[in-house]
Length: 68
Image 1 (cartoon, rainbow, N blue to C red):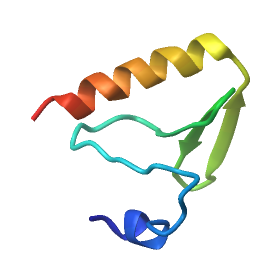
Image 2 (tube, rainbow, N blue to C red):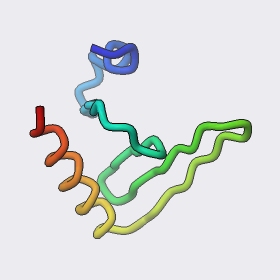
Image 3 (spheres, rainbow, N blue to C red):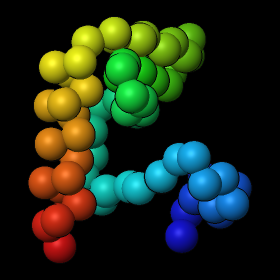
Image 4 (tube, rainbow, N blue to C red):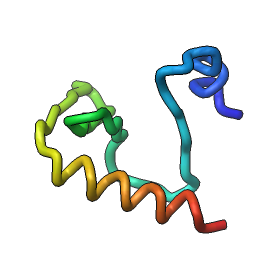
């Protein structure tokens, strides 16, 4: 269990999972938006309010979580 998962383990309103694949940004999937987190000298976050993007990211991560 990661440090982030331990921190939020008692919160019943969220599910935190991770993958071993290297992706270029952090991704948070919410009910109606996707938030991209960019870490660097100047951190940034971008919110996309798009149901299709939510659906596609959910499908992507479900597929990745299923792989060993």
